[in-house]
Length: 61
Image 1: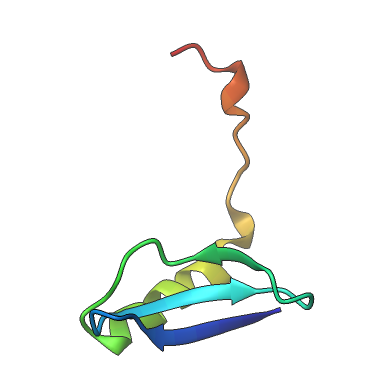
Image 2: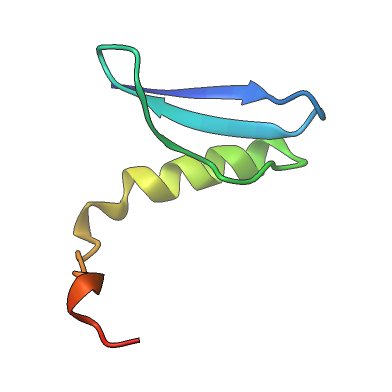
């Protein structure tokens, strides 16, 4: 697995997480004006291993 840091067509910084078979399993969802902000977002995702999982199918809207 690897994070890829790149610039989009509009010149904003983005990231994507790609697995061994080449598929992208996650992306930034937004562009960042500063590379540092994009790198910070990557670090947040890397540290999110303690995030809980919520089954939204059991929630009443």
